[in-house]
Image (cartoon, rainbow, N blue to C red; front, top):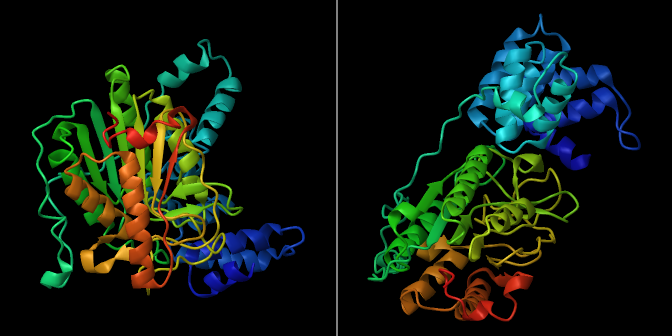
Length: 433
């Protein structure tokens, strides 16, 4: 409780909400029930703008607290995550039609709880003559705003000092190829700017994604129409882009290689036995809002693509559930606890920027993540013709050396193939051919 109380006392409204729930209901062996204290803290969190606190305030007294209904609704609609849509449905639990539509929206975004609720409402809904799938298909979900595409060839504007020594030619001297890799799809995400006040931004993540997208187009020869590069995606937007990627691979009957690149924060769950990509609308306290790597690998495997390459410039460690992200002062790109990453599936090779409890660092002089800089450098030097084995050896040697020289700490990239590619992955090219 000490970490949670510390955050609550220092103005973190979501921590105040969680602590309020603990006091209102009691937690066996941790804290006894103190309803009065809990309600007071809940109101403080709601007045501070926490959406979950506003929702609970409304539920406690709908007639008296209608103002909190509007606050919660506006906050959840802005988030547009599966969990947010599910919670909007809860706000409308007394309006069956609206509740059903929000549950359908949440279900389509991957919320399992929403599907369970829909099945329960179908089962106990009275005289429904059709099967569940037919009934569910008749429910019209709410439309959510799609993310804005970042054109791969355009770099984001950065506040970087105009020092020639700090500007590297990996951003401008990008090799051109005449080859066309028409059988490769790339989904690229750079999450840099996080909305939660206690989550530090990820230095240069937008730039990482934009420049890697340029290499995909110019050096690897992937057609622009087959590259999707985004910055600062919410949980709903990340899931939607993976869903679209699935649909594209299916449209080509699996005759496609897939590259998935991510630069941003990573987090573990409380036990350190699962790891997650952190959307920009999440704070790491509720990992259900985050994107589980186990789920991502499963979804990528189910595409039945020819081969899948995953590149993550993030680390997946932390001090523990509810602790502050480190990195605001020193610029780390993750947080620190030994975390267990899932095993790649199908025909998949995963490159990770760091291992175990290590931090994935930025390379400040080059305005990139350390891992991404040397990834780009190898693509530049080899003109995109290196094998995955050569890339792995290059990254291990150069990232470890640079991290020790710059940070006095070790950062060790790791390449892990699935069982289906053991013995052959080192000879594969980045585009899977």
